[in-house]
Image 1 (cartoon, rainbow, N blue to C red):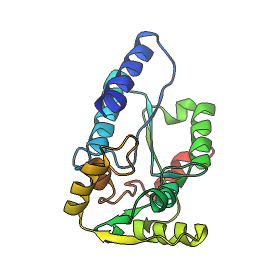
Image 2 (image 1 turned 120 degrees about the horizontal axis):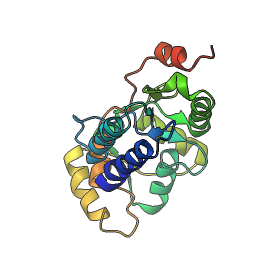
Image 3 (image 1 turned 60 degrees about the vertical axis):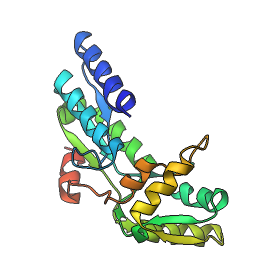
Image 4 (image 1 turned 90 degrees about the horizontal axis):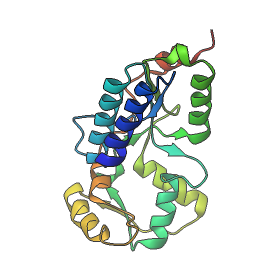
Length: 202
């Protein structure tokens, strides 16, 4: 995670400063936090800090989990029902997420590209209009796909052990870090009003 989320963004930001590039957009995550137990979320936060240090006027966008064609959120449940004996819901799937449509993320990036000065040095959270538990998302997916999935409420500590075994697979469906990530709420710090005020047209 460190190379992808910290080292590479830091290098890009340093090069942008050295080459006097006018604007830089860095894509982070709404869950970027030094307090998260997920290493992915921790390094996302470290990446934000590294970019800001090297290029202080960078625009940081922080999308929530994205859904859309071939996404890794809703499709995960459908694929898990096919590839795994059971579909685990960590701690009952009660953690919340506020997924955002991938096309809407692209639209916001386009707004920033069109008016970069307005967003210089700002952080923009990107999120959908409603939060859902992972249990609700699983129920929605299986209702749409008509899959007869076996869903299991799995305590986080048990999920961590199971994920270590699955992680040995070539393309693991579940990793120990995903257990940490999906046991935390994935919702924005920015309110809808703050977002609307930042992205509204002048």
